[in-house]
Length: 62
Image (cartoon, rainbow, N blue to C red; front, side):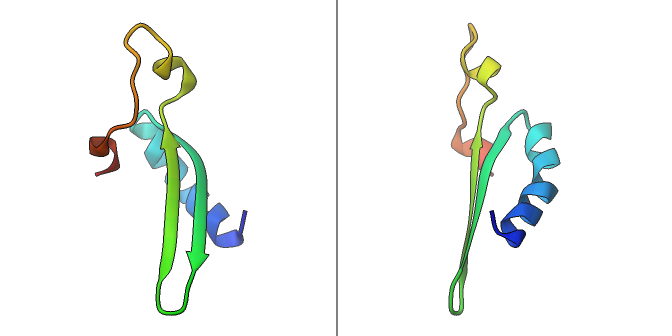
């Protein structure tokens, strides 16, 4: 993981967890004039495999 990806992960993990989600990974891809930042999130295993299974929705990403 690059330094920037690690820093973004460190900064965003508490916020993502406060939303009941898990931050699985961060990708930072610098480019000339632009960059891409990808966040991989999911529902913790226990919540996604219980009686009322939950998955990440677009509303979770807003």
